[in-house]
View (cartoon, rainbow, N blue to C red):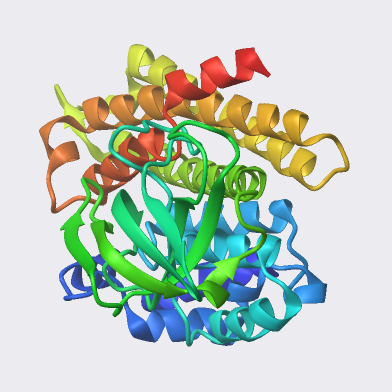
Length: 367
């Protein structure tokens, strides 16, 4: 039913031309579509029933994100509901997270997670942004990069160092900072796949101590688990996009003629498309495995290992299927007029998001 609701939404509201118009808008996403997300209950999917959500299962998120991937949905579902909402749900007390999550699920609150820094690569423990306690406030200084939805979010969930050295696993806290606070400087830009992100600088930003999410200095484990869930989401999104690339390539091969014959009849090209199909199925299977492990009672280390296995395998599929789709389409495959080029850019962006193929391969080996 969840999958069917997304498919109907795409058919009615999210054609390729609709998406291009949304990307060209000032915010880079549709407020009308976001309100419809809330009305259809999609913003409740990442949250448990105890938090007022749909159930919070990773397998449900996989179904949703795969359909989003096929249509290249650009609304900030992962930054707001999975990253931002995930941190609030994992670390917030009942008094704080109740109102925040309710507003988020109603489509009234947008969040962004500011977790990465220029010197940190994909290491979430590498935090130089400092938060110094002064009475009933924290004074925050530092800079965050690649903050998805950072330019338009109402609130920022920022990883800060309240104690210890830059790369220590302890001493990391999460602060909820109002985007309009004095000293917050946001530089918006468009990523290669058309999505919006921001580089955000905090110059002596004063934040009430009550805006601390969770226990001071003990946020890293929860942060890593939330980012792993987001990694699974974008991996599932990539599976949907790769499936769309395969389908569009096969259909194109039936109509594109060379030497008076449809190129789909050439055995060499059939073999290449068969390899694309195999890569798509391998990617879907391993993402499904990772989703089921996230929903199980195994250790946090085993869950992280499953996510890295999925992201690594999906990264290899992205390279194979994406490049083959472009090559089999020829020059038209990289034009803005054809959706294949946009799909290719999106999956290429996903390959580096939350850790690229090499990073997750190495992390898998270390677990």
